[in-house]
Length: 97
Image (cartoon, rainbow, N blue to C red):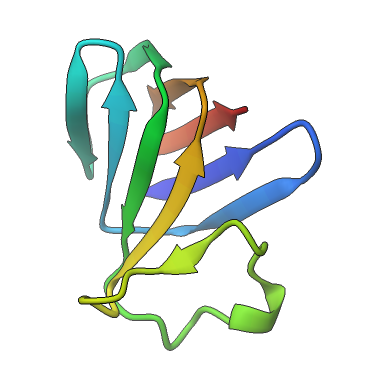
């Protein structure tokens, strides 16, 4: 699935991913490939981006807020204060604050 994370300042991330875990208002939830369409609010927390491989990602091009996970090279993290998420047609758009 394709994931795009946008903040008021910049596009933080844009790439194909295996899955994404987000901090929902009622707890953390994960979306995989071909997830049902959804629109939801996000609360303060960490977005976890699961990539098959970081070989296709160029870290110089990643926004400074996107940080590789210390224990697993296939996980990238982004801390947010709030936001919204939409999943439709295998594309996830996160508007993060």
